[in-house]
Structures are given as structure tokens and as C-alpha cells.
Image (cartoon, rainbow, N blue to C red; front, side, top):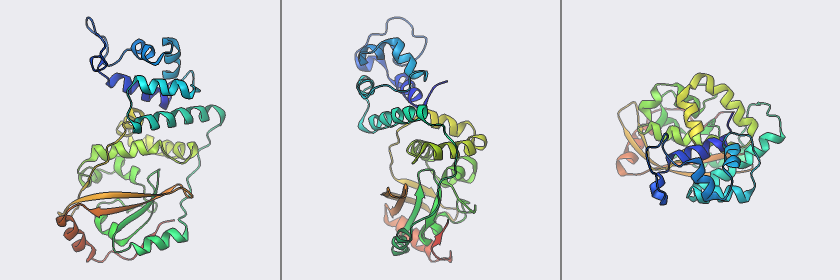
Amino acid sequence: MGTPLGNFIRAKRDSIEPESLGLQTPGRRRSPGLRRLDLATRAGISVEYLARIEQGRDRNPSPTVINSIADALCLNPSERNHLRYLAKIAGDACSVQIRPVPPPRRVRPSVLQTLCLLDSGVAVVTNRLGDILAHTTGYQSITSGTGLLDDAEPNLNRYLFTDPRARTFFADWDDIADEQAFDLWQAPSLENLEWLTSELIPIAGPEFTNRLRRHVVPHRGVLRLNHPEGHQLRLLRETLELPMDAQQLIIFLPECDQTAQAIDQLQRQPHGRLRSIS
């Protein structure tokens, strides 16, 4: 059985054209991408050792080995950070027994006060598992009629992968799905990640599990939304980390005048006051 670390290395290896690294590929190849032998040679490790890492039989490669693999795969900075993170949690999984527990949902009063100052705008407090913990009326206005906030404890990942309306609401659903699956690997603890995946995997199916295993490092661009009332919104996202709480305050800014006017129209409709979900 593999590990997230091994899955990521294999996925990157399979995605590389040998010719791009100046390697010769004589004859027909049985599988695409970089051979295990080629990667091991470039990283300066044995093929057997690389196989153990990819197959999850060695979960504690040294930082030197991880950096050598990153160099051999020509990873960019974001991919390198992700590789190091996966190596860390692979080692943690060996030393602790994971006991799934639900993540905390409380938002500190000072964070809620900050959100109140932003109530005329579009902002939300979430954790890395996708739980929507508190939001402004502006956020409620741009998601009204989509079903995202219908649950008593709304979760963006659950909505994204199980509610058919999400594929219409998010104009670039595939990109957002990749983003959310990737962010789950940055969950505050192994226990919390296991809690969500044990709940979500049975109902989300392969659309979720395949993305979770591919480890696609996202290129976060403009967020495009199709509001049920016909508005097409283009939003920029600014994320403020709340490390004390393992939460995030995300502020959505209109990317164009048309979006700003649409948000203004939506906010004039009654949606209630700032809501804290906890």
C-alpha cells in the first residue's frame, strides 16, 4: 500500500517527459513518464530504495534524500514544499496511531469582531478542511440559492464533491476541486484529515479520491462564479492565516466593475445579518 509521499513522487515521475531532461528513450516505452531507474540515478539513490519510498515501505527518508528527489524531478518551490510536507506526515504516521476526531469549529470573538468590520464586503472564516465557520452577509449574498450554506454545518468540500449544483456555481469546477483536494494535505493535523476523508470518501467517490492522490499543486487564479440569478462573478482572493486557530480569513474582491455592480445588487436583497456557524 502506498503513501501520499509515494503517490506524489510517482505522479510527478509519470508526468515528466524524459526528453525534457535530456534523457534518451530508445524503443517503445511500456509506460509514460520518467522511469524509476532514471529518477533514482538523477537523485543519487538506489532503485530499490526509491521503490521502497514509492510503495510506502520506507516512510522516513532523510531531508537530504527528499531534497535530492526534488532536484531530480525539477520541482518548483510550491511542489518542493509539498514534498517536504508529505515526507513529514509520512514519518508522523509511523509514530502515532490516528484516531479520527472532528475538528474544532469555534471562532474566537476577536476574529468575529474583525469579520464584522468587513460585513459590507465578501469574507468568510474557514479551516483547511473546508468547514465554513463564519461569514459576512456579502458572502451569503454571492452564495444565495446555490445550496452551499444550506447545511447546519456547511463544508465546502462536501458541497463541491457531492452537490450537483456546485458544478454550475463554480465555472472552473475542475480547478477548484484540485485546489480543495490539495489544501486537505495542509490540514492542521493527521487526525482532522482522517476525520474528513473517512466521512467524505464514501459519498464523494473517485472524483475526490483521485484528486486527493494526485497532489496537483494548484495555480490559484481568478475565482469565477455563476450565480443562480444570472450574474457572472470574477473574484480575487486574499487569504489571511490565523495560525493560532488553524483557520483562515478569506476576503473576496471584485476583479472588475461588472462584478462589483453585481455584488452590490445581490447585497441589496435581504439575506440576514452576519452569521457565526459554531
